[in-house]
Length: 186
Image 1 (cartoon, one colour):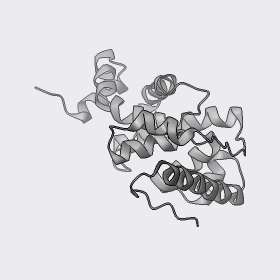
Image 2: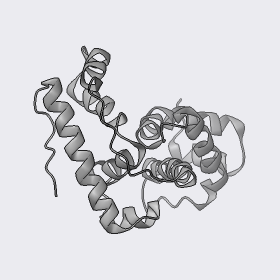
Image 3: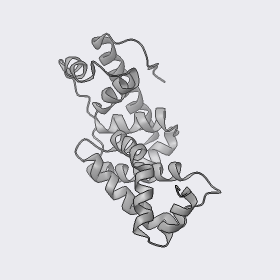
Image 4: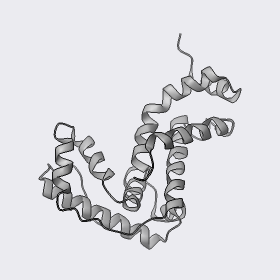
């Protein structure tokens, strides 16, 4: 019989290793995807995921199911852990112009679905652009929230979002991919 998530959470609150293993198995796949989206290029998403699970286990006592679900709460920890790594490094406001990037990306993603193509393309953005794009477009943060999270100005958030969209649009056009992403500037 498979234990309910409430039982797993309770076991984690009591420090039970088996419950922690079950929670890891329950969330790892989803949280690894989140970690890959937000971890700076100079860091390893698996290391970020491990650091995040340490925080999840340490803070599980503060999780309140009446305020949201466990997955959303855990996603926020993974995102914050990745953003902390980015903040330590600092955001570079640099546009990388790769003439051959469309070919590189295209060779990596020929046989994948459209959404997987998009994630590979987004991963090629400079860290600051990638963070702002994902926080705004995927997580639904406002520019004010992004600015607070990344310790930047709101205008910088808007600028990086627009520049990331311009860069993504140019790559999609160069790669002659089907239009599966509505990349409109603000």
